[in-house]
Image (cartoon, rainbow, N blue to C red; front, side, top):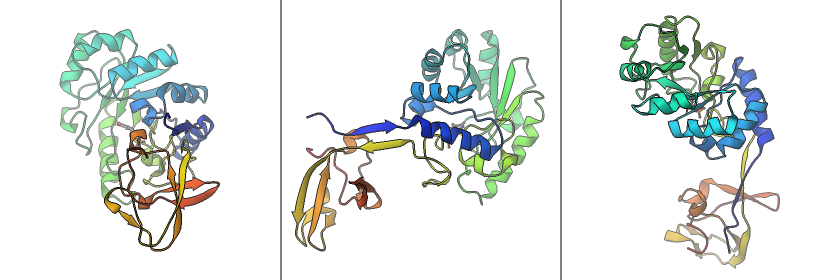
Length: 294
Ligand SMILES: *Cc1c(COP(=O)(O)O)cnc(C)c1O
């Protein structure tokens, strides 16, 4: 029997989240659709977001950018966050993708390849990708975007947010006319002084809350459904699943659901999770298996 597990994606909820984030931030949202739109399907999600008014998108890698260009057609702007590596420049130009340049080397590769429009990323505290503030290059004709990335946006109290915002204000002031962007999803909720000219939401578009837990302002987008394969009555003292991680304290009826880590659920002790069975929320027990047959 094939897996009974299905992931469904509510594109109307995706659209609502897009408009919510633009309203909260008070700035245009440039959706981040990297990693296949966080697993929900980059082509379907980006096409719907384009219908909702999104004009600029971000992906992480060149190959994602090439696929997204094909899915979206010629109109939208697509930025590639990894920037520009060696032979990649030709493919970026061919697919009309804009690299987010992260270092002096990337900038010279891009210019030497005859590349035009591009963005610049500065490292204001994340220490991942980006120009050091001390290496800020002079403005160049194709520059369209100046951005940085917050490391603690999901912690509104963190002093780091203001440190990064100030550094970004200072460095971005050198690039007149470029779109300035700092905020990811959580950053949209830090106040409009974090929004600048455009925000770059990812997780909140897809239903994740800005602080790592569900939030009433964000509509769920993904739903996982599966069949109940078996119902069993067990007595007090009976253990359940690998590692006998759960032991019944009283007689109970348990359901085995046809979904596991083969379907992408995490292989964890399941106490934290729950499942809706016949419209009622029920706790998960024991450890998530690969699938119920393994
Ligand atoms: C992934 C990413 C985002 C989106 O982050 P979320 O927290 O998912 O909203 C924005 N900007 C950059 C540079 C990213 O790498």
